[in-house]
Image 1 (cartoon, rainbow, N blue to C red):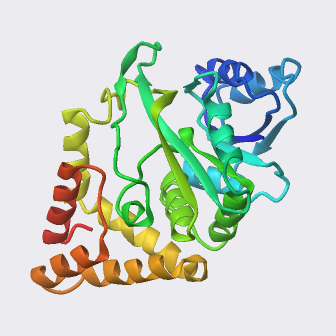
Image 2 (image 1 turned 30 degrees about the vertical axis):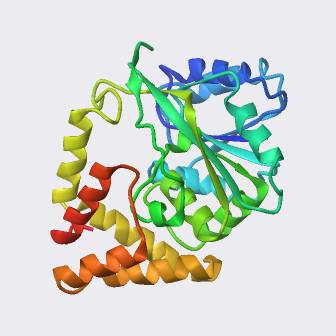
Length: 303
């Protein structure tokens, strides 16, 4: 089991995160920590944990210093990291004790050669650790048709088996991405893998004063997403994802390729043509309001 932890000036909270990793019920955990240029003593704290870490090895490497997405990408493609399972980890969260074991037990019941991705809902906490709410509870099945327009879970909740990591590494070696969690969801579903969304929160996701919105389902968060839509940010992110999928078209199943083709065509032409092709593609978001927003985005050419 390898935990891929990205750090950047996380000294204030990384000790609490590492303590929650050490308290995991899964017995063997190797830590791979990519530090992206911390100047606040984060690396010194990591080094101090080496003598306390009794679950495996602690490996600290220098990150590319090009942002969080590039930092996680560097670990995804790193050939030195070998394990049966891989979990992404942020520097300031708190994991529930069975966060790893819950995912691995599910994976052990599946075929090892199938790319598998486990993710979950999160509980949000303030900087001081006070519970602030929950991320949305999604009920529709995870799929490529959903992944094209929505990332359903944070990377801090994700765990991949070896087949999924090899698939993701192959895809990530050829392209950049907006965020590792959305990209992982896209690639695993595009290639016919399985995704398990666990409704029970297994990670306490720390929100900071500069971006605290309570749960992601809050009205403030909704207006924030609408603001990004009007600014065209969603369209830009979609372009990046589609470019990445185009480079990796050989990994897509026949069904995913057909869906992708319809979705790309649906972004062009007049309104009726866009709506008709969007409907044929079967693309959807997890909630009614989310799907309504998707159609509005197509109406305004913001996706």
